Image (cartoon, rainbow, N blue to C red; front, side, top):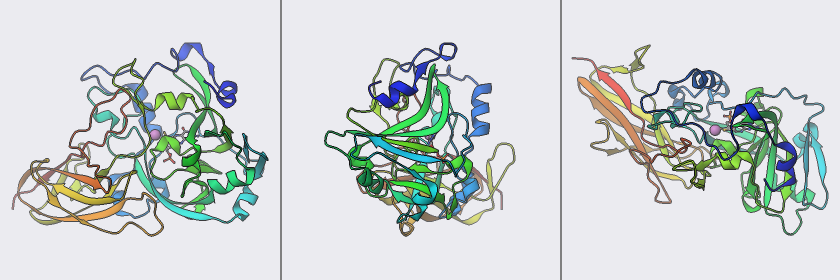
Length: 381
Ligand SMILES: Nc1nc2c(c(=O)[nH]1)N[C@H]1C(S)=C(S)[C@@H](COP(=O)(O)O)O[C@H]1N2
Ligand SMILES: [Mo]
């Protein structure tokens, strides 16, 4: 821990774990989902896959991930403190923020832990399958404007973002904090947002104000934002140790940053209630879905109806207007024949990244963009 921000706000709490360097426990092979994983899954819901039909995810259907409790903040007394290595530290309230020149960015968010429960063995944490995703139009003030007003001084390295929520994680008591390198913080589309899909942020998505960092996995999108601090050393807080691609407990690993390419499809036909296996009737079925990448625009999507043995190109729509790293809609036709099928899709982006059928394993269960496996039963004629 090297910055004043992290020194003040974190401390060790004995009964809950060892220390910052201890990754989450990995389940034994075949071990059932625990009570604690169920408890997390019930609080942090995914986006029902049929909502892939919408350009903008209706707000209540957007996935949700909150590490601690959702803080209840008073919009009249809430202030965003901008300070650290700046010429003029200041605090700004909600009315003033709303009176500044606004921008709206349409951005697809995905939790870095999406796909975690499909790792074998899996990390014990929020047990996502493939549904930790959503797209929203976020309105607010460019972070670059707010930094410019403070006057960032020479020698600045990182910008640290602090949320009002507080908890303990693997023994470390903390405010939720993440940082960006100064150049990333100043980049286009990084917004301090007070509206989601044209309405004030709801409590669960960061009311009154959150950070939006297009293209990055969810952990960077700090909710209930109260502090923006410019610092002289690379930020070394808990959430930066936690989000790394490690092979073992001692592996320092690489940081989790941008979203790996992924395509998902709306499960076709109608579901069986318990198993959610799909049922379709024989004949032509239109399969629709969305594809995105946080590195570069998606350029190609393929659909397989035989579990990945053979692939056919899908038609790809334009990205929504005003979007930055937002998903694109795709469509393909499938001539369904009686029997059992496994549907899956894969995305490719302009950087040459392709979605693998099976992504590699890592200890935290991050960035698992393995293909969706949608089981479909086609009825007899
Ligand atoms: N303050 C704060 N910000 C946070 C979190 C949090 O627990 N506290 N969770 C992060 C994670 S891990 C994700 S995936 C996204 C989820 O954003 P959403 O709940 O609005 O979809 O918020 C991020 N921002
Ligand atoms: Mo997340």
